[in-house]
Image 1 (spheres, rainbow, N blue to C red):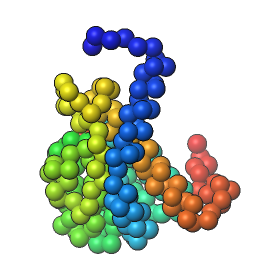
Image 2 (cartoon, rainbow, N blue to C red):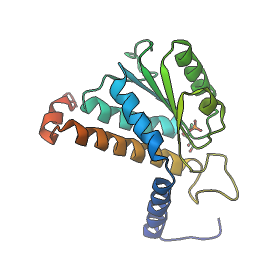
Image 3 (cartoon, protein in one colour):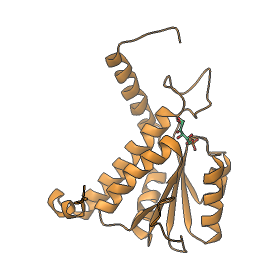
Image 4 (tube, protein in one colour):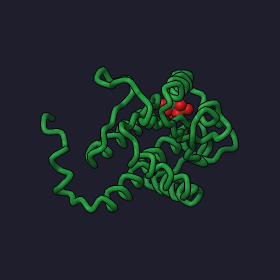
Length: 188
Ligand SMILES: O=C([C@H](O)CO)[C@H](O)[C@H](O)COP(=O)(O)O
């Protein structure tokens, strides 16, 4: 690492990288994701590490909008079944626990949508549909789609894109902020 920037300059770089990601997204794949979310009986989210954390943040928003949402790995998460949707996030598309979850969901005839930076990865290949994010994967050393460390750009994009999907569905729902508020946790 030769160059040291100010933190503000680095923040600007991060924002520019995220802006670039938004121009490279396939709008049709996002519309399909919106439709699958609307049609699913239950929506399951699964991811590991920081990707998993980004998905957990997004999952809460869909719960606020009234969808039945589960995060894989939580003790209260039920079995995935036909007519359910699994949203799997994996920058590399190769994380072994997520490959397994994808395979198991497909065996149950659930729909699987992968959000990944590698559209040729194992998870992408197993999934019904992919949201391809043109970000670096965590081992993308050397020349890379991002100056940030490891999968940071991918992980940020997962949250931003799903927040944007949430906003679209929210706007279409006609619900107000006040309508959504009763779903907010009241035991915290
Ligand atoms: O936490 C992570 C790591 O810090 C990379 O930035 C990843 O999200 C985690 O290792 C899962 O990897 P992927 O399945 O490739 O997203």
